[in-house]
Length: 314
Image (cartoon, rainbow, N blue to C red; front, side, top):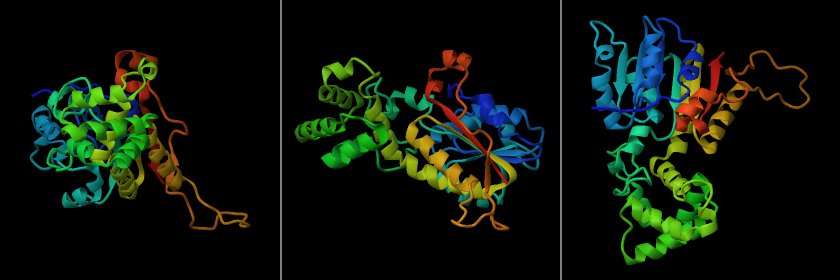
């Protein structure tokens, strides 16, 4: 079983965690395990808990990381098949109440995009799906065929920044009156028809923004991110760090604002000094997001939109 995936900002993400021997770490988005393998190589002791809601990723990891999953006393790697929004709950089941580091590699993984049958990509013809957790009932087919015109337009604009969202939503509703929109290529053709020809000639694939928006809505990606970051910060031990890679502006905004919320102290007006006991929870390790090097940009196209933010628990 193969899970081919080139990890983005690999060394930057893990090195900025400053991993310590004997520490407990969490990979919130295990995927192909590229970041996990590098982290484990830097730990002679300690353990890593890997979360992924995609059963395919978990099954692949069971094979590819077999040596780390075994141990006479405590295995160095434990896998959790669940969304990272259940972080605190799942760690409690393992008897873990504090962690020394956690990292997130957000968005859809390369293997998910490359598996045509998953319905994530506008490059392959498949049934509309886009579920990261395939045990989930709600999928892209239901969204496209059940949301009303305003709901569709709102999703496309809010999560994809699609300026032709209203035209696309109207065209979707018109087409599905004839028959349900069942496949990725059917949706691609509808999107192309809705976008003016001049606009289609620039800015990449015309369906890119719409597919991103639908995927985000199907998987509630932004809602679960906010909840998980809050839990992660609460779980971090003093000196523990959190690294987050984002690939779109809405994700980055959530991470930036959450880190800001916990790294700054609001002083009431008229109060000249910070009262004793009022201190920030986090320290920003990098004020500006870390981006890919020229070398990585040349080798991995996915890294172009990547931004890494890191913070430390005080």
